[in-house]
Image (cartoon, rainbow, N blue to C red):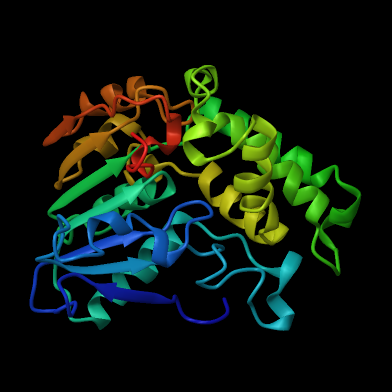
Length: 300
C-alpha cells in the first residue's frame, strides 16, 4: 500500500520515550503538524509530561495515499482503506517504538473513530480514550451527508470518472464548499463568526479557508478518507454485531466530548453510547463552532 505510515513524535521538550505514551491520529484532511498541536506543542501544554505519537491517516496525503503511492497503485488504483488498516498500522508503530501500553488515545472526528477501533481491537493496549466530536458508528445521517460532497466531486468535468491527469480543482473546490457549511452551525453564521477569522464576508471566508484548504487536496485522497469514514462501525468487531455489545466490551476509560452544535456527531449520539460503556463520561463542548469546536480552541 505504498510507503510505511509516516509519523512524528513529541511529548516533553525532547519527546522522551521514557514518559507515558499517548497516540493522536490525524482526522479528515488533518495534517501531522497541526493535529491537536495545542495539547503538546510547548512546555506549558497539558501533555508536556507525555511521550506523544502523532500518526497520519491513510489517504491523508502524508501516510500512504492515492496521491503518493507507487505508480501501479496511484489514483483510482489505490485500494479501499479501513479503520482496521489504520489501527493495525498504528499498533505496529507503537510496538516498534517499544510502547507496551497507551496511557491515552486522543482523537478528533475520524481520529475519535480510530480510537474506538484501537480500544476494541486491542482492548488491553489502551488505558484511556478521549473522543472529540466523533462516534463509534457512522450514523445514517452522517452517511447521507457524505453523499453530498461526493456527488459534487464526481459531477465535475475535471474528475473525469476518476481518471484525471491534472488536479481536479473544480471538483475538489465543489467538494469543499458542500462540506464547509456542515462543519459549522447556523448560529456561527448568524453571529458572523467569520469576522473573527479576519474575513470580510462569507465569500471571503469560503475562499480563504475552504477553496484554499480542502479545495486544493487531491481528489482521490478526499475520496479515500471519505470511504473510510463512511464505513466506520466498531460493532463489526463483536460476535453479536451489535453496537451496544461492542461498546460494553470496551475496557478503556472513555471521555466523550461532543460539540453542542455538531451536525456530524451529535451530543445525542454520545449520550446513547454512554449508556453501554462500562467506564464512560460525557462532557459537551458548548460552542457555536459546530463540528470544528474540538479543534478551534483559539476561537471558542
